[in-house]
Image (cartoon, rainbow, N blue to C red; front, side, top):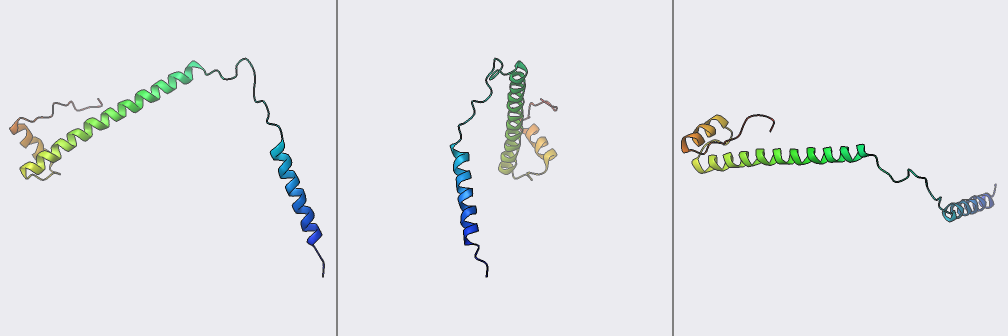
Length: 106
């Protein structure tokens, strides 16, 4: 029978030494130059546009959610089917609770 324990011990020792060597290396200084750390104005424009898009989407969702919630509450209070949109709109118009919203993107 072949004894492989010295081979395993040597392999484990080399692995531990390599790991210690890699962990003990000095960190590189990184890129240092006159242009390092400067962002382009295009990046700022992209961030501003993304922020505006997120705020617009949030505002649009809030408007839609508020209208839907208002219609649901009206339907529950008046015993209407909450899924009958035309019936709810007609009943709200009769009472004088019209949605003064424009149909469209904004």
